[in-house]
Image (tube, rainbow, N blue to C red; front, side, top):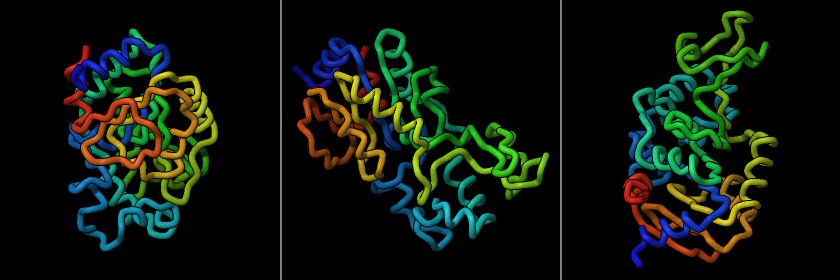
Length: 240
């Protein structure tokens, strides 16, 4: 039986599926990933600082203007559209008990129609005033100036994304852990599993069926049922 047929059979027989996705899920939509050969961390930074520094809470606090310039240039891609991976998962959700746990902040799963999405690192589509807590969508956020200020209280509007140095939202992590512990099929796709604590969540999956889909080798120290090398969207486009 070939890899696609094996994957299809695992999906068909599963009762509770968790899809755990990273940046590689969105590269086919034109969004840069982080750690691949052509990823963000391997590009020479025009800001002369490593991207981990640029995306840290301390850099946001101490270099606010440059942070927002960088963030808008590299983290927001308004032209991006859902690819075959996002579309397949939205379709699968209609016939299977499926939860998507994503490390991405692009909102493409929801754009494709998925409802059961847990965003570990937040979303570019949600932004809030750091003072009065008013909420702003992406278009509103982009209209608030180079350093976005709340029209009501003139304080900074921050993207609802988890920066380096910031903890994950506790209610979000709790939901992710519960869904992983209830699943009988875990599909890990498009992630190097090198971002913590997110990568450590996989220890809460207690089933036997783990599928790993990625272009590069991934150091997952668990027994893998099926490993497929390639682009997530391309592989999912072959499933029914």
